Image (cartoon, helix red, strand yellow):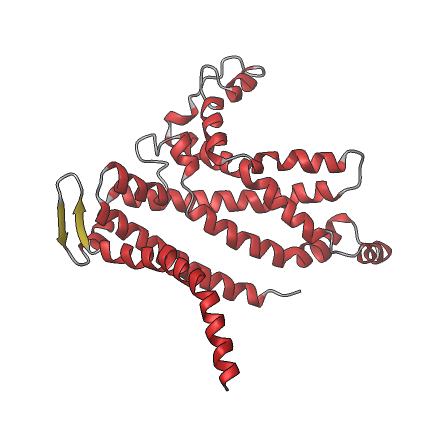
Length: 291
């Protein structure tokens, strides 16, 4: 009994520093954010007044916030469809045997290895109407082409989604490729003997066997997309107008530009709750898919 108590005491002493750090860096900020969201906090005016749920009610009447929610939904859905479709195609190409296969895999990963802020800044220049790489390439086939991508809502949103897709698509594809390499070639040989073609083998063997990988990747990538901030910050600053302001970007502008800390905290709390619910639903769905 004494030995057991001593064992647990030593165990708690060893774990306690890590536990305190976790509480201080994770639990406390969450609780404090909930707390601040119940106040009207305006740093410049020195205002800190308890307003209850008023900050949350304001969310439903804030046209900027509604625009952010809409674009975040478009951004997440568009980006994930692109990741899944193009990621599978890229993974299938990388899974083929050809000379230079290893070199190509390394080159493909380069965009993922670069910081998003750097890519977003470079993309901002690439989409410029006068000296941008994109328009320069298009004008080689259509000399009269003239489009400033980042000053129109639809083209700016498309550009943001395209840059996000280009950045993380290689990483998604490499993880799908890892799943492809666990599929035995004997299964394809057996399918070939039975008369199945490439398309039938893909839908009957490949896709079912990597579906769990794709589902798990989709869950994590969706979470990352919902909290994306840097691509918009560096590329469009939420413009034109407020059309590309993602929810995470809205939190930052309210907190550090408008210094409306209480309202920013309420947006962060709602975002946290949405993420928690989606995580729970996603993990529940993942348990139902097993091959």
